[in-house]
Amino acid sequence: MHSNVKDLFDNLWQNYLDVTPSAEKIHQILGSTQQDDVINDHIALRTFNIDKVGLDKLAAHFLALGYTEGGEYHFEAKKLYAKHYEHQDPSLPKVFISELLLEKCSPELQAIVRQLVDQIPAEAVTADNFLYSGRHWQIDQASYETLLAESEYAAWMSVWGYRANHFTVSVNALSNFETLESVNQALKDAGFALNTSGGEIKGTPEVLLEQSSTLADEAPVHFTDGSRNIPSCFYEFARRYPMANGQLYGGFVAASADKIFESTNVR
Ligand code: NI
Image 1 (cartoon, rainbow, N blue to C red):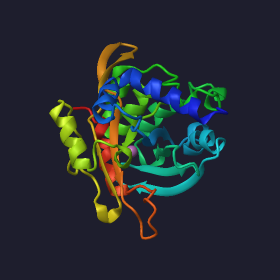
Image 2: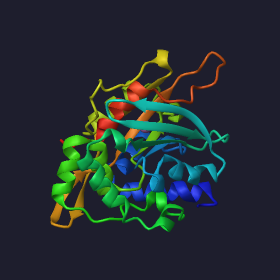
Image 3: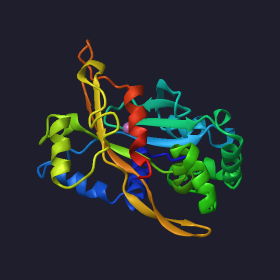
């Protein structure tokens, strides 16, 4: 486990940039030259609900750094369960961790996933670098295709493993942009493709959170039987609205997150 929260996020960010080069360009488009105003609202991590690597095992890395549990979320159709974690220091990103509910998946999918997770050394899960350690297994293209036919999420995990699935720019903190619409327009003007599943903007001021995201970059993946480009990670943008007490809403909206998951879909 990391003892320094900044080190952890710096490492997660560098590892994310390895397969998400567009994030660096977007950072430049949105940021002001006068100040460092590109603040991270949250990151998201994915896993499987197998004891060895379940949501709680990932969360332990954040609980050790003073994070506490926030809300929980259910995604019936995608067979996912998620929780978010937050820190009392509001400058630290929230953390959204989801897990695939294997018992709801086919025996074929379960067998492939168990065989991947079996290859992770037990001590790797508590090591400092686990959350940005990538995958700990080999996989062939046929297994990947079998997973992809049933669950985009499982397929993504099988090739990318443990890493930040996305980082999220806090639109509230940007000095050059006020609305999510204006952020989206600047990105489209610069040639970036946005996730349009459920509309470019997920959520509304009424549910206190609006989100949009790019479509994932693609990066080369090495299979045991060849290499090819696969969608990697994406960048997300979030605008939060104040609750009745004046504080910005700090949770997530399941219906919006459901569509955001599709940012890594194979196209
Ligand atoms: Ni997100």
